[in-house]
Image (cartoon, rainbow, N blue to C red; front, side):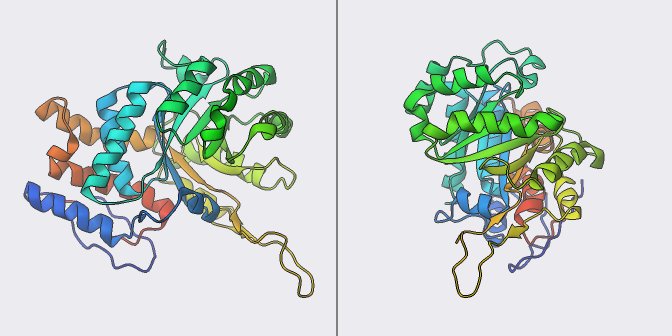
Amino acid sequence: MALSFCCTASVPPLQRVNSKLSGKKCLQEVKSLVKSLGIHSVTSSPVDSLRSGNWVKLICGASFEDVVDIRNLSLVYTLAGVDCIDCAADESVVGAVHEGIEVAREILPVRRPWVMISVNDDEDLHFRKAGVATYVRDAAATAELIHKNNVEAIEIHTSGRNISQFKSLWEGLEDSVRHLKLVAVSLPDLGDSTLSSMDAMYSIMEPRLQCLNLWQLDGRPMSGDIGRGATRESVAFAVRLAAIRDRPNGFLQLAGGTNAHTVNGLKKHGLFRTRSFAESSNNEEPKYSLLQALIGGVAYGGYARKIVGRILTSVQSQHGLSRIEDYPEHLLEAIVQAIGLVGTVKGYDVILDWK
């Protein structure tokens, strides 16, 4: 298997990764690779990533509850530098995410990504498609999970067509939202009614919103496709919303069909890491001191799970249910795959040649 990836930054590239290294050598290669890329120190913040336009979220999947895979995915993508890990609103799943994060930070003291739980205000494609019955829908149970499980963010999946259900869920969360650092709303492209739905939902949230908020633009839900065409819908959705100046407050983030071609799609439309400067006259200070990217970042779900999942499946077929860090050669291979994807957004300077 060969993977080559290159982007420009100030750190020197790692020239070659050898899959025939011993376990000890492979673990050292993992550490060297992560260090050479300057992947988040503990002093950086996911907020900085949102404002700079290089936020990356891993979507474990609101209907995906395989705790062993979730733990290993969280470990791998924490080392690859994601800003947030989104998972099902289930205590055992949240625990698996935390365990993966902490093991990653034992390997190297990288920054801890935020943990996000996903809920839906009604029947949602992500859960309907998977036939899930254990998914937490009760707002009170979700609020309790936020209180006791060190959850920094929540994402509400909505069709955007029934605002009363959104309001009922939001009000049911009560004061738990005060403990959050980010509230995200995931919605599909509703055409001409998208903006009015966003306005209505934001007006419901605003009185009790004490943290950042984000709109997840769900272009092609649960795709996982690798082709260029899969990401077109999410990019087109972002292009349209980014052009609306009077949209409600909040970062914009792509999802649904996102893959290794997504950033190139954004670049073609001038949206990747494009900052808007506030106007000022004479010697007056700009109205806004913080410069913010038009698009906060990208979330990767099915595609991110697929490229690393192949390696996790290989580990399980050889060793049964396993902790990936116990097999450093597979961990290295998984890190290479994860960095190849995350790096398209983060701008890592790396040339990987996996043989």
